[in-house]
Image 1: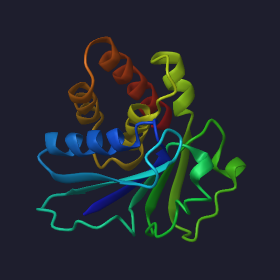
Image 2: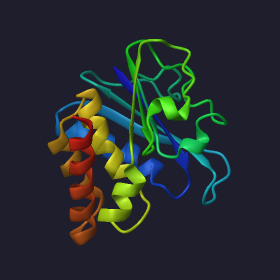
Image 3: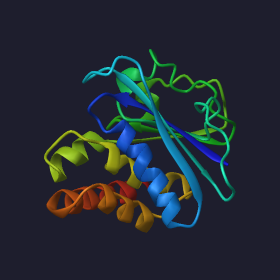
Length: 181
């Protein structure tokens, strides 16, 4: 089973990102689940959501404590949320930042974690017109982990959004994918 924890702030589409990731997995014939964890339910408050992807039925229902991947939609939550806690050896950390991982001084307890950054907010602003990095980061996630295909992510985006908004998010996710491969 591949487990993902997504950290961000209310209003950034953290919950929607987990949902789209699970839809992408379903489209590939896999089992998946997505669910959020809220503190105070307000714009800007820290939010965490989870996604599990497996070839078999998923019976777990608790929050992801030992993720294979962590997606950080807002780098300001890294330290307060202890976002890298529990990440497994051989795992992945994808951070929404135009800076390099070294510039962010990411403190990981695990030596064997692939850390990559992508300026998802900048891509979203340029192509979507709003600072919503969720779909953009899923494009990068597909490139980084190879757990799901980009085509599945793009189809999942189209199930959550429609019309011009869907197409803009699809274009932004493709750009983010290309920046990570």
